[in-house]
Length: 142
Length: 68
Image: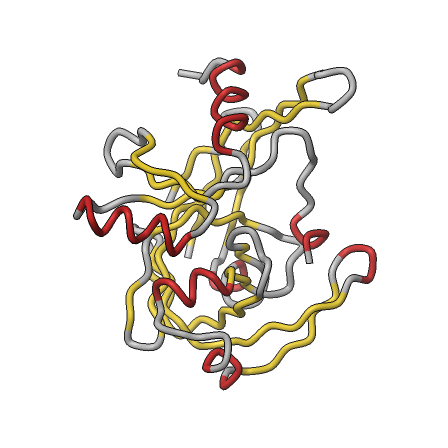
């Protein structure tokens, strides 16, 4: 599976200087709890140990509530700056279109702005992941 | 073809911090809202399949694990 890197621009607040980079965004749909979620743009985050989806996604598409989500696997999370949070994990199916990953562990976290695809349950499901910055694509081999 | 920087900046300015529903084929924006539940309700009323995207703020750098 080959996916184009996405050109992204942000601005420095005082100078309006443009910073441009090419980001590894992938579209994936998540099925869990006998429900199928919408395909959503996910960030491939090699620095994340796990897959993390916003709790909001689980509530809107997967039939979980703030209470019922807590029946999942509890996981304390430490982020940058030693920030602490807690997430709950479920075995889900991740549908990337060309590739479908079954029984993969996804954690749901409040205030997570968008999904992250991390090491356990995503990156470790592939034999090779190559980021080609010259031609601006990312390639996955299973 | 590369997208012009100005188009990307205008898109981020207009939709920053919102969930955006995009047409699956054309990738044009169909609806946007800060609440995913509200956006999905709007889209169910339109009875249209869509791709979801969360638009990041224009004036800040994103480090995924720093948002916790």
